[in-house]
Every structure is written in C-alpha cells, then in structure tokens.
Length: 385
Image 1 (cartoon, helix red, strand yellow):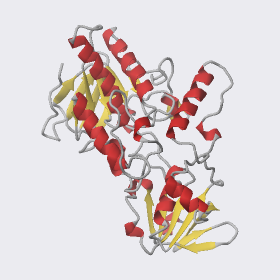
Image 2 (image 1 turned 180 degrees about the horizontal axis):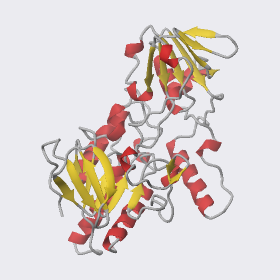
Image 3 (image 1 turned 135 degrees about the vertical axis):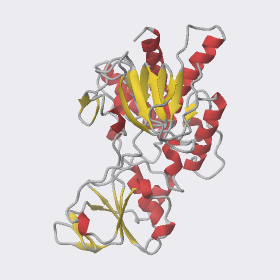
Image 4 (image 1 turned 120 degrees about the vertical axis):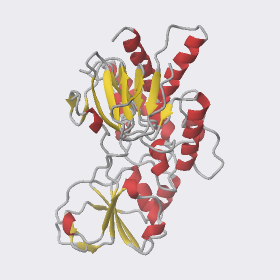
C-alpha cells in the first residue's frame, strides 16, 4: 500500500503518520539502495512475478535529496570514476569535469535516483524515538507523527554525530574550532593560521584544499600519514574490503583489509601537495593555550582555527528505547545478512561500515548488503515476524 503523506502539523505527535511493513530511516545512499530493492519487489509482485511484496516508506531528516553529500566541501571529489560509483539499478551519469565526480554531481545523481524509481521518501521528518509496538513490530515517533512497521532498516549514517576528542585547555582557546561538518570551502579561512587534525582522507584533503588560501596550514596526525599506492582508487578498495570480509567468514586467511594498504587515498590535489612537500604532518598536539596549541616538548603555535577531521559515530540516538545489544561502540549484528540486529527481530543496520557489510559506507559497496537486508526484512514481515 502507499502510506499517507506526513502530517502538515509538526506538533501533531498523536497523528498516525503511516502504517507500513518496512520503514527505512534515512534517504542517503544506503536508504535509497534499500528502497530500490523494496521497490523492485513491489514492481515484480504487481507484474505477477515472485511472491507478495511488503509495503514500505523512507523517512529523511533533510529538506532536500542527497544525504550527507549535500553538506560536503565544494572541492571534494570521489575516489573512483562515475562508472564505479553507482547504486544498484541506475548507473551514475558520466562526469565531464576534471578528476572524479564532485559531491554536487553525487547529489544530482541521488536526486535523480529517487525520481527514477518514485521512491516513497518523506521529508523533512525527524525521528525522535523507535519503540516496541504492543502488538509486535515497532512504533517510530517523529516530529510529523507516529509510524508503525513490522521491520525497521536504519540507514541514518553518521554525519549528524561528529566526533571531537576532549583536549586540555580547549575551553580557554579564544580561536575558532569546527569539525569537518562545518567546512564548505577555503574562502572563509583566507589569511588565517589553521590547524587541521586527522590522518584520514578528510584531514589530508582539507589540508591540501586550504593551502592556496590560508596564511599557514599545520596538519597534525596521531601517527605518520599512511598513503595508499597512487594507483589505488575506490574500485580496488571495494575489492579488497570484500575479499577481507569473505575470507573472514569462511575462516580463511585474509588478504588484508583496506587498512593494510594505508589510510589516505592519494587523489590528485593531495598527491600534488604531498609531492611538492607542502603536506608535511606534525605529531598530535597535547593541549590548547588561550591563543593556540602546545606540545609536550614545550613547543607552542599561535592559531586562528582548529579544524577537526576526526570522524563520526553512528547516528542511532533514536534507538535508545529499544536498547539493542552492542558490540563495542556499534550495535551487535549477527546472521545472514550481517546487518541484522543480534537481539531485535526485524531491526537492521545498513551503510555504517564494514560491520554491516563490506564497504557498505560507499556508493559502490552498499548495493550487496542493501539487497540482502531488503530481502531479509521482507521475509521477516511476510513470515509473520
């Protein structure tokens, strides 16, 4: 069935926003990939092929399509060509600019993807909490009313949960601090002394991006930067991640995961800055001074802005009422597919990283776990789970 549109009154907490079999939370690349397979089940059922299909809806907190890609900095580019950066069913249009596709190109693609399959995305809808339904399944409470479903696929990503480590003296620092989530381009930092923290792709790319504008860029990392070989791109990373997970599941020796090669993909701007000797990492500082940063050896540096490229945590606060089992800092998953909650029937996690599917946090990698997850969710619903 087609669920009704969300209530126009954002305060209408008691309004039943919709009742579906499968509710997908998040309309970024992972949520759309799950939506594609659920849509295909419905299409096949309508054509008399296969069995019955579950009804579904997708809730998205953003006002526009594009997931987290719409918030990335202006010069960000993918690790791979368009042909190797596609979601299932619809190839990303060719990129005619320099290098690999830009973040804006990805946003246009995700918007077109939604439209192409007529996916039932409701936005902007903020999910506040998911609870057990007294009759089985789940109640999803939002700012636009309450949804009921037999299964939930969480595909909320991590963009809304940036991680910044606690550092001594941070509260006394008079300069600016921001996370990757607040960086949109180099122009606001013209003439500034900027410290970029983080030894991953974001740290290297943003440090390289700032070099033409900032008065001084200091890149600090907890360990010396590890660049992947220059000829390695997203295609090779996906193959490597897949081989690692498959070997581990079979109990065979792993060829090594992505981390065995390095932490930073040498996209052209990073490679150029590195080869010119302008991207030299310093060890991590130990704390702040009122006007800068300091190291344990007594060195100090005057700083205008500290930019934290220190990663994210899964955005799962809405699941607190369910208290799903955890494994370290992430929900525990088990079975086939590995996106299935270990202790909550009908609850799935998609797109957060290798713990819920090899390379599932990438455009090219999310397709396989999305298919398995949509299939498992449909079986759960249709079997009366």
